[in-house]
Image (cartoon, rainbow, N blue to C red):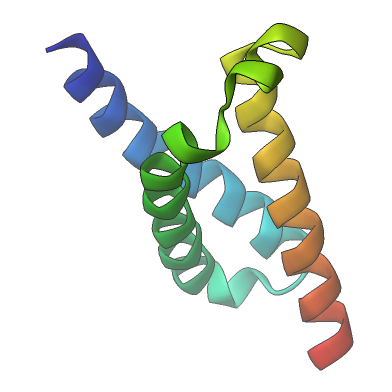
Amino acid sequence: MKKIIFFIIGFFVVPMMMGGITAFIFTPQDYELFVGFWGSVYLLVYILFPLLYRPKIKQKMGKMAFYTLIYAVLFLITSLSLIYFN
C-alpha cells in the first residue's frame, strides 16, 4: 500500500517540478507540454528502474541517488535537445 501511495504522490510532484524547471528555463507558455513529457518520463523510469538498479549499483549508491542521476541525465539530454532543435 505504501508503494502505491508513493507512486501517486511522485506522479503528481515530479512531473510538475521538472516541467516547471524546464518551462522556466526555455518557454513558460509550454508548461503543460513539459509536465506531460516529464509525466511520461516518470512512468518510463518507474517501469525500467528495477532493470537498471543492479546489485553492482546497489553497492555504490542508494536508490534516491540513482533516481537523481537518472533524472539529471534525462534533464541534460532534454535541455540539449531543446537548445539544438529550437
